Image (cartoon, rainbow, N blue to C red; front, side, top):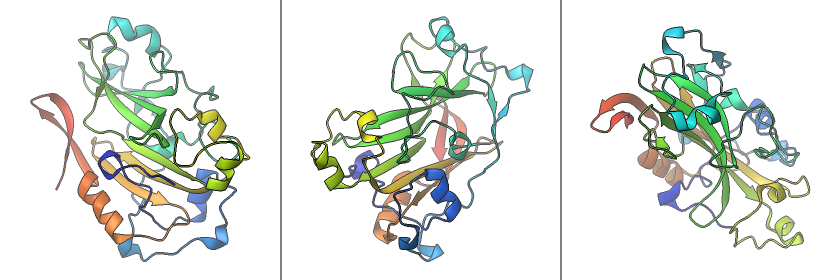
Length: 269
């Protein structure tokens, strides 16, 4: 089974102890709850600081989120709701899922679809100031070796954005979900476990394709725009080398600051 390359978000090897609540959130009925590996809390990336508050509709009219949308993007974002902080990936667990726990992005009807990218749904707009708003989205993606994953993104929305241009807010991805499929289940339907080029997420999401493991890179943005990321997995023994690699590559804490290229996230050491 292939995994993401380290340079391009190699997270599937990183693992954590996951409680019953998290197991339910992932929606993996295939996971044997009795087989979970318990890891020492000093050797795992914990998601304890993730905020579970529900996302609220923004009531700050001075920062109405649609004011900074460029003309070419008005139609696409007209139905996207305004959100307010704090925001976490766990606020969006109501996205439609397949029976095996994968998110069914193309089949979801709760959120508007992106016009430019049909495998992406638009979760909400977060107003920042009179010139800048941030768009939160979730999409089907593939890694460098074409192995499938699903991820959260945060992009800038400004009046002066060039047509067709999406400017990432210094972090890609904001949050990530990796799925580790059982090789024999893939082979049964004619999929080579080592070749995932152009894999159809609808096929991978069918209930007859079982999942060995799900790993999620969580995110939380607090009311001060401070970003915290963490990582959780199911049924995997924590690997300190992989955890250290994740920390060194992506860190945990980021602060939104003004830079030479505009508003962006910078790592807080």
